[in-house]
Length: 559
Image (cartoon, rainbow, N blue to C red; front, side, top):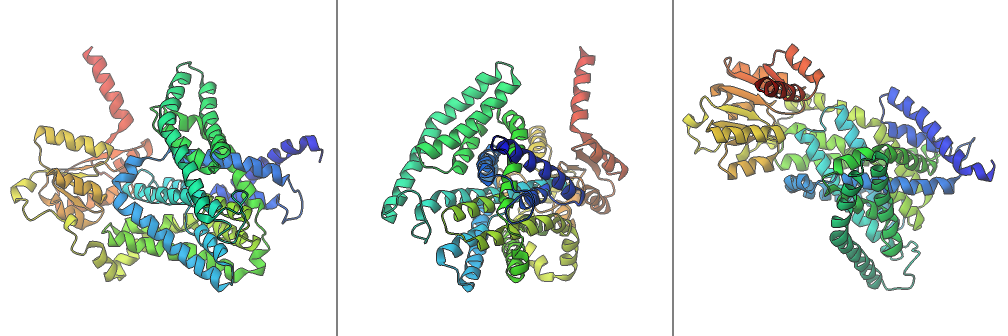
């Protein structure tokens, strides 16, 4: 290969193979991420045939990490996280602790050093946000309560891993690895210096970044040039990530993440996300290809037992811990199963952490290969795990009385308070879902003095509504018990505002069994869902775009 063509050949080979294997993975109903990793394996040094420039590939992977972490920060919503903080924060930290302890114990049994064991356990403890988003989207759950809970859980995991990425380099020598800076410096001084640099960087981002970068986006957007706007977004992301690493010694992952968080404050954050998405996707592909290049498939033949054990830890131990914790917080069974399914894989943060561990000489090649093998297998199986949620839920409900008891055991939020008079829940409206649409309807009903009861899966929302004196019950309205507690048998109208539609026909069927005369109003989020709901004869169906068009036509007629 000619030296001058090395960069072009690296990019061309990476993209071409990623495209072919990504298409194959998609045809097999696997995440495209699996295809990208396989492309990296094929052009890596562990397999015969074409071997691309590894050093160049790693540099492009760094750009991929920057843009990947920038995207995570750009979608980070502190408000959404705070709504679910009582479950997501302790749940995620407990899940990380369980998986890390089990992974560390396994590594000790394999006679690995303590530092290696700890980093290996951490690599097994964090699921992929990218894989979860795509799985939830495929199942139509991305905008559902269960989807929000699962995403908030993973956001907390991501935040915890950002802290790990920050603290690992100064702790490296103490853990038995190597660090490029601070050699000979006492541990407490190294940690203190790292924390001071991070604090200075955070202060600069808080004071300057929150004012300058949103203003910069608005100024560039005012010029009307789409390409300049995209360039501004990418320049900020890469510039902050690189500058933070050079000036403050902060990892490029943390710098890019904070750049995304700062951008999230801008009113133009949604446009920034959509405009930068193609470039983020492209370089993310290069990142996953470079990760695949680190993998030696021979480990599947030489250490099959260890590979199986790692896969079982990822797919069983942590999801089971999450399943029990969600039920302990009295969330519905389908919420517990959805969160558990979403956590039954590992992805990009595990790759970033494994690469850092290898760089710091904390992870040997065998450990890196086990992490990558676990990721490849669990990501490949994740869509099948999600498909198993519904039949597993039916099986548990019919054959496991203990889980049914745990799910609704003496739950004060699962039924209306005894102080609610019968007259208050007669000829009322049952409002299923209290999100963006349901919340507006609820406020409108309050303003008109119409009695209503809210059925909502998010327990924090139910607690907040009750604090305001609004009648609400916690639970999944697809369960008859929830609609019974909302007194749908005496209601005049059932209003379903949930964005997902697959369970709506069953909700309506249960409601009409309890109250044949109930009027039903249903929200649809797409033309396809509107057709589905109409064919199931669920009631009067409203589509957002159609209602906006009707309102505008009405205004035109009035004019």
